[in-house]
Image (cartoon, rainbow, N blue to C red):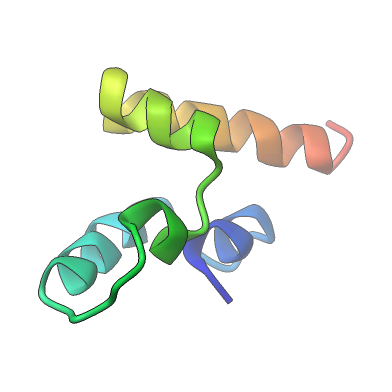
Length: 69
C-alpha cells in the first residue's frame, strides 16, 4: 500500500512522506517519486509549486471529503 492510501485511511501521519522521500532517493526504484508515494498529479503540483504544508492541507481536505466531513 502506497503512502497516499495509508494517509487517506488514517494509517500514516503526513511526516512519513519525508522518510519515504529519503528512501526513494537512495533506492534503485525506476518509478517517479509521485508514483512511489501514490500521489495524484494535482498533489505533486501543489507540493512542488507551493510547499509541504500546502500538500498536507490539500490531502487532509481530500481525506475529510472522503469521510463525508
